[in-house]
Length: 476
Image (tube, rainbow, N blue to C red; front, side):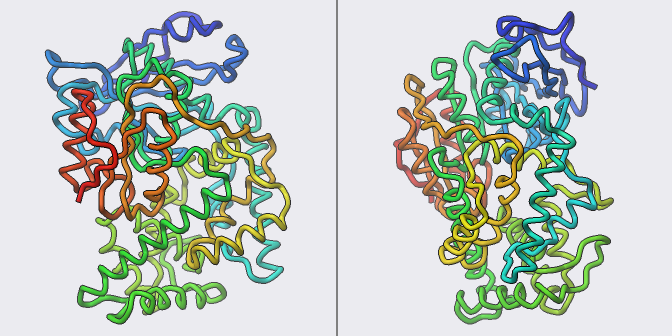
């Protein structure tokens, strides 16, 4: 149980920065605390968030360098849950020299207050709604569900929504740095965590010791552009999976061309728009929308490809249970039908971080373009963002993040990353004034500790000694 900071809550920015964390022992050698941050940095004496913080102390205190703050992405991913995996997501060499620190960003996870929008049954219906509307009736349902999501967020979390953008989360991270007693921040951010890190670098370039941005998001991409590029990333990953599958026996996609194998998947999705497969999971029909989510979920990690083969084998014989289970993993739905607030927070942050068009015809046009660019994933990913068209608070204007004055920042990208395509890592590294690009010719989402000793060695060396690899180096 984390303990709130001692004394009355801060009312000035200096007061927030002067907080002392009150650590108490919690799970498996970890220590927990809570950090207060203002809702609105322009009005520090007004409302505040209480954020949970957790740390695994350095295993070699005599050689301790400082804290390594880590973030798993999302947006909406719990930094507490991620830090609890510290022994598998951070190398032993780095854990020897750093306390590994995780926190739930404002509105996320165990943040008080936290964002909540829809109930479990409402989310079940939202995710089962056709994500590739072809008929007017299907489109009307997508619009209805998207409006319901936005209204639910306004109803249950309206007071939070203007304040959960990434700029504020980055400011919170500097309050955390000060509370940890670190003169400068050492940070490992994955996926959306790279955007959070880039914002930190923009706002506090002189407060950085080392930033690793792994599975990079391009901060300069438009909202619709983000969806299209991500959809293309999933297409690349699906082709890589299919080619790998066809080298195995048996492979549910056959042993012809990769395009023929993907056509088999598309045929399955087409058939299940109106005729779901059997599913052993109550409240979740094994229809096209959930099956595609299951495929996408398994593409995040090569270690899940075996489950995707199993899921497709079951689906082709009429049972969609495994693919629905994979879909549930992606959105953190538990077996009892309860969801974490990952999806609620993810949508709330995405809708305020970038401007989104409000007119439905603009979305229809964008979905058509996305479907041409990425036939399997383009339209579903585009329509998945539609709640942002009805969002109750305005989005922040987009800012070019350059981080002038920052020390070298290590940007890491995987060539066949489904969720954050390699071109985003290239764009972020070249956009930051001091970006250094490190690539991995590999599969799956993010690179550090994902199977490349070359990447692991380069990242560890940078975190411990600040030495960077040659920019543009690709690990094989």
